[in-house]
Amino acid sequence: MPAAGLVALLALLAPLVGCATNPVTGRRELSLVSAGKEESIGREGYGAVVAEYGSYGDSSVQRYVNEVGQRLAHVSHLPGLTWHFTVLDDPAVNAFAMPGGYIYVTRGILAHLNSEAQLAGVLGHEIGHVTHRHSAEQLTRQQVAGIGLGVASLMSEAVSKYGGMAQQALGLVFLKFSRTNETEADELGVEYATRAGYDPAEIPSTYAMLKRVSDRAGQRLPGFLSTHPDPGDRETRTGALAQAARAGKNGLTVRHAEYVHGLEGMIFGDDPRQGYFEGDDFYHPTMGFAMSFPAGWKHANTRTAVTATAPEDRAGMQVTLADAGTATPGAFVAGLTASGKLTAARGGSETLDGLTAWVGRVTVPGDGGTERVLAAAFIRLSPGQMVQILGRSAQPDDADFRQVLASARSFRALEDPARLKPAPERVRVTSVATPGTFSAVVGGLGPQGLDLEGTAILNNRQAGDALARGDLLKTVLPARLH
Image (cartoon, rainbow, N blue to C red; front, side):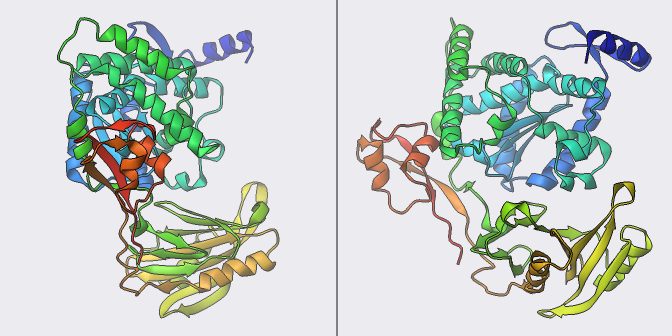
């Protein structure tokens, strides 16, 4: 926006725009987001985040991360804020912050860290985003530019089921911080960790690990790097910051052994109990169903949806839960039609492996009077669960459309006892008995869920590193699906 246009816009907004004092710099800054609104966004976003990613079920891990986080928050620029630290049940290597003091780390990043001081560096970095009001800065920029945080432009349509502030919160998860924001958060992460008594010299190795994860993933950046752009060589920069911060200080805490032992048994990678694919067949042990997807389609499974996409994105389908109460599938479709959410529905009641269902095609109203015909199935899985399957294709009733309906009709109850109780991969902690190179020692530990390089990254080691008797190693026990 030209400078003159921005000045004019701000003049129009003047009655609504406030100035807030940045807790870190002490400077007064233009802000459309009050501290109260920040807290509301974070609070309402909490439920949406947990619904999307899941909260890790180990209370001891949750308690431990919260204790470390509170220690850091106490020495931050906002010690009086009510801070919340949550471990998400997500395999991605990720951590992020939301306004109002809501900090999230995934079990994926916890498994890749190797000391409590490293964890303190990650939490301190995210606390820094909050204390420096980076999210409020982003929200202000979006609103001044007239962009807003609309669901359609910034995030998955799956988010649309949440309220306005929860949508804003989830939108912030997908927005990238600026390079300046990242530099400021890096500086604060080192500062807060050191103030809390941790050795900041542990922090640079976190960025070395993230780079190795990124290089190994190719274009699929770990979550942390996809939303936290790298302002140059962060390992070198945080190393210099750490050296200056720890000068003249003694007795700083690392807690390597205690941290690593605490990872014993942590779930690693995707949890098959939340659903898994074998070829084109999908099994969901927790919900107790199975179904087959079209051959050759790409699959994805998240907490809230299972999706499949045809080659060249010519068609797609999604499996979710519908908010249907106790209505039968037929009554639910009739209610959607009566309320105007559907403009037409052509199909009928069926029984799929003993489950009541409605299968057919529905017409959904769109913007500007447009309509879209979707393949649809609504299946009553249990008294409290209605499964909704929707699919799109280039033309109604074409081959892809029919494949979606065939896939929906493959829906069945999962009754195989072995498939109902899969075992996920888990972290195993081992003490080195016989000295040797990392590759030799790891190679003698039996079947594992990761290859040598993946295990080396997990331990912040190189294949040729020398290991001494008593050194701790993290490996991954393979999953047992059936």
